[in-house]
Length: 238
Image (tube, rainbow, N blue to C red):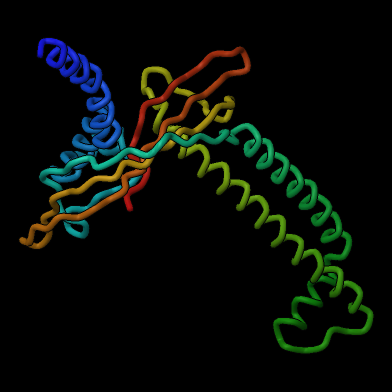
């Protein structure tokens, strides 16, 4: 009988840590609870300062409602990808330089063919055929205009890509006392999806809603090996 009790006690002591591990995996850590609670509280009270420091996405009380309570159902495994800050910064500089070189060539041609280009533009404005002597200039100027648009699109696209990558990293590492120029760093972006069930009140009606909240964190690495580990922020809600 004593042996049976001893066996049972050992079994309970062995299983307790496993049970705690299972609960933690399902319900998330205290850090996740704290961040998400702070986010919903700030959204509910209109605390824009806090929201701007911890979130990249809004939760508008007028459109999305207010969250009074929530529970974390599960936390997905962390995912990571390399940050392309340096790469995209170089791509933007290259696109801008190519546009500048092209513009210089275009201005030179425009100066050389100033009168003919004006005749072409007047004929196009009035819906008339250009003079035979100006047909070649019209074709060339049409090509210059097409390539102008192409260069503008390349610069704009490169700027948007870099801006999106900067936004992904900047909030996580933001520190007003120590500004960080993120484009000077390599590193990685960590993300994890937290599934929650929230009590949401909207237009006087309260209901339970399932949400997936994406958290993300940047880890930057300088050329000298310096590591800047950011904080987790709310990146998306779905």
